[in-house]
Length: 404
Image (cartoon, rainbow, N blue to C red; front, side):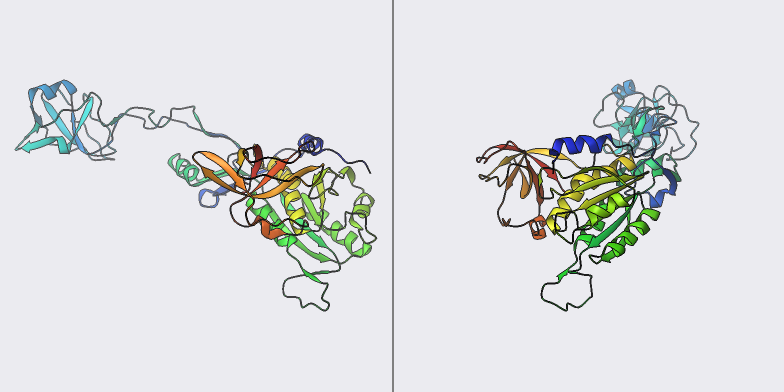
């Protein structure tokens, strides 16, 4: 069997055409966490007119030299209409958020003056334009405020509300079906009948990853190592999903049926086998506009390969710029590489003095089943095929696991 390099497999994944991004309109209250399907462009400036940034008195800046300025009788509250005109020697009491009266160019704050009957006495002068928000301070008409493909967070919600956006165009969530295969697998709540049975975790881990990345998902349950059952489950998943993800059955064992069933479904196998650790037997296939990703059965393997191969497809379907973030970090201890493959090793990550630092304290070395290695402030350290053992202080690339 010929295995692809990791980089080649990623290049081929990037070239896959996932079609046009499908969109839907949702209410602003339901838009948190969704991905914008179009640019948000300002239709007007904010503010549209010079605005008071605090409570005070609207004045002409040069009048401060007189030391005393007459107060016009009408106040200028936020949201009100004020027809007063500020001319030389007079001022208007103006409140935060109100439009600056015509003729005024500066706002002197209340703390800097003393009111003496119908005048203010200047105790401390302010600079020209003080506490006046100029037109377009926040943005101008035509500015792209939020780009297509952005994830909507609290700040985006606030900006969209300020633009009076009731309905928001967002990318439809790609639908991911998750299939766990294996006669030894027990679902939650099932009782073991033999000591060799193991509790299913893959389908729940991968469902959580899919949701975290912005997809919707459907659990197809656990399918025993039976060709007819596996085929039926795949056919059901293909009828309703954009991406079908399976775990188990892709290696070279007598009961590894998934790798043979996928081509029989009529799917085109893009590639099978990548020189990575963990997960070298991964299969990527396509059937029409749907994608099938067959992952290994071990918990750590399936999690890592889902991040590397399924998250990029989800990101493409959502219009996101990238599936995850990769940063440079410094090794706080030496690292012994275990193979001549591209390896993805769970490591502890911390930001120290502005630099990412990684170590492996508490991370167990063993099979690809140790999902507990992903707990805590964990990242995935990347080492290439040509890398050997690494010394303390070496710069390495790591995938952040909190940026999906």
